[in-house]
Image (cartoon, rainbow, N blue to C red; front, top):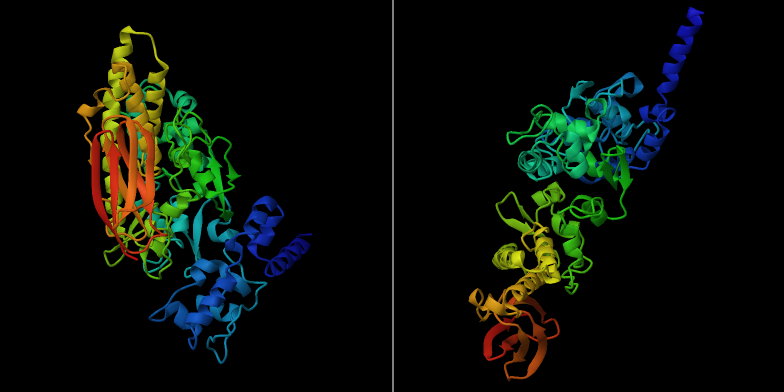
Length: 553
């Protein structure tokens, strides 16, 4: 019987040589392996062949692995390939899995022995016990330990293993708020607003784990959100105090790679739900962002960038969509596609609108739609919008506070509720008025007007003490074909903003109608006009101002 068992064992080994690890895993992990089989991790050989036939013509397999310009594609695209056929070197694996002519690669190099090519298979990331993360090192044929899933991804999607790689998503993530500061932010919130609460109470009131570190519940073999909160933040007698600080910072995953990418099918946008410990497939990138940067998962959240961008939700305020059809990732994950640029290597994972390139220059996502705009002019405009928002928000804070004090000895007013709501809604965007500048201004102007009405009984009230009539110079100027015009009115009334040509003929009406006191920004598109000098005139009540602009096409 023992001899038969040995025979069966060795026959099994021989049979397994003809199957990839993923195929053998299929019998017990069918759902996971099916997901994997439809992902890019399961189809890497064609990509490598394309790279070799384009950039390594006339080179031998050893040049790719150890040459002066070596790019060890085996180590990331199929690290377990060198375990095939009883084991071989990376050089032998490259020669075995890709066709050569007289020992050299050509423009017609194709994949070879495809049935044995393992792709990025199960055993690339899972050690034999399948419960421990580790990255298979194709040089040493052993596993390199990793601290978190992020470090595992960073071996191939970052510089963790290959410092000279042009795949730097992990490095970009590390530089972003998703990759750091999250734990400190949560600790600050806990030590300020959750004094005396237990982890369970915090999760019930405001589930911070769900967005700031959702995959933390998968650690230590799995735990609840409350347990994760208790592990990663200090408590005294089981409750949070003013001295609560981060704990176990080494294992804290932040908003990890696998918070938005199911590791077994990373091509499909998915949200990891820390409550159910499962992935929810998203219909769009905006839906994914809106889970935490909007109220898609938590209706009572005060993080509402997604909602502000939609230009809806204010109380008795007109809906305004500044950039219809523009998705979150269009601005925050812009990729120039230029080889060697940080923008291309990071693939948008800094989530910054502005990316500093290796030569010290900046790229701005704004330029993909506004072709006449430079990164510098985009930065200037963004700063201008932030300054405008800050000024208007400060006024709103003063006016709404004054309205609250006035109502202490008076009946409540729906105007106050709406003023407070619209001001808070504008502030909840957390971009400083950038995501939907016109709508944010509309919300704040409405809050000021309604708060002022409570105190003075007239909409304009004392706002004139804080604001003065002003028509700003358009920016940029000269422009092609779009520019922005800002103006301020301290009194509500009928307003006109008209564009005239050099002969004094009206060519465009930008504003015509009643406006509340406040600051305004208007975008002007001169796509249908010819190059030349134009004038724009603001007129409201007894105030009139005219400025010159230059259109250069």
